[in-house]
Amino acid sequence: MAGVTAVITAHNEEGLIREAIASALAQTHAECEVLVVDDGSTDRTAEVAEGVGDSRIRVFREAHAGRSAALNKGIAMATHEFIAILDADDLCLPDRCGRQVAFLDAHPKVAVVGSSAYLRDRQGRERLLRVPTSDRAIRRAMAWGNPFVHSSAMMRRSALQACGGYADTRFEDYHLMVRIAAAHPVANLAEPLVVRRLGPGSHGRSGPRSHRLRTKLEFQRLAVQWLDLPA
Image (tube, rainbow, N blue to C red; front, side, top):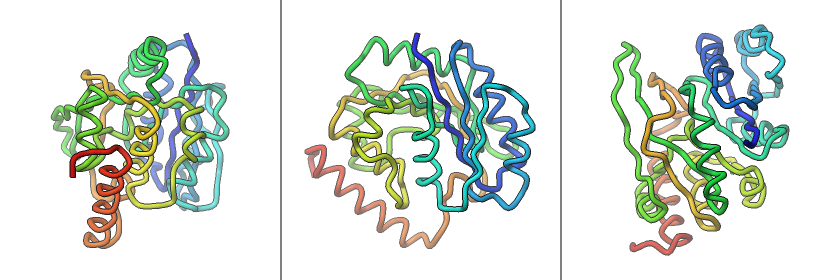
């Protein structure tokens, strides 16, 4: 079975990064390396990551350039063809990589597979987020937003590189998934394979709300155009 590179990007996540790394190292899939890209943290994020002390981990300290640049750095340094994305404030369930590798091996034309997820709030309460699973349903959902939980995405590095990786923009994950779906079949698994931890400012959602909404609307229009969706 193919190897997996888990790419974790972090900016000032010293309180959560150790758990994210531990969840990636605890995969039942045998061959999994973990790359941590520290995006210019001003806290002890890099020191905590380096202190885990596992030979499967590589930590890269970068000047602060934003999440897209950090993700592209991790992808460029990956050893394996399958790239498992994990935000530093999220967690993988133990069978995540094994289930997704098995799916990609069985469906060689699919470029990215995600999954449903548990959403966990700051009080530890969880609810299930279900996602569309078929290529057709995912494409239709893309007219409204990103139907992939970013931390659940496992992608083929060849497909990522062919489409140019992450763009330096808001909603970079949505933008990337639309570009991949324009060239390849895509899928989600129905079972939850990750835990997305919710909190203020999580996953880089900053800036004026009006600007975020305008940017998202632009991407919705692009999705309709590139995927030939009903307007």
